[in-house]
Length: 169
Ligand code: FEO
Image (cartoon, rainbow, N blue to C red):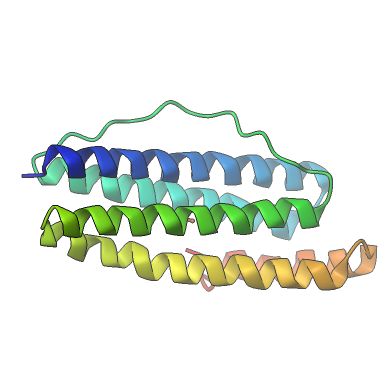
């Protein structure tokens, strides 16, 4: 049985993951409209992954005798002035998600809920990977700058990132 404190903390994380899914969906749609197929496919996949992160928490809370709270859908407000701006937001968002996961891990220890602590280790590993991927992409974008040819090649690169399962999860 989950304590009230853990239940509330998990529900907070459910919202973080749901918001992430919406934010990446907005990024995917924007990139698609701009004609960047690879970036768009990567972002759509990211959005699906975030929904999976959310669902995993929902099911966990319910299985442990809690009750997941399903949050309202947000309308993401993004700075789409450049790819650099876009991917900076992606990176900063992942850093925020990591902080949020760490906070949840901390609460699980405070509550002596070792099952939840164990369950959350998957998210801890996942965030290391997600941050690293976002950082790699941002580094590449910083190298390319506004160079159209570079962006074209980068978009092509992103097709393999989103297609072979080696991208951010
Ligand atoms: Fe579910 Fe990208 O963190």
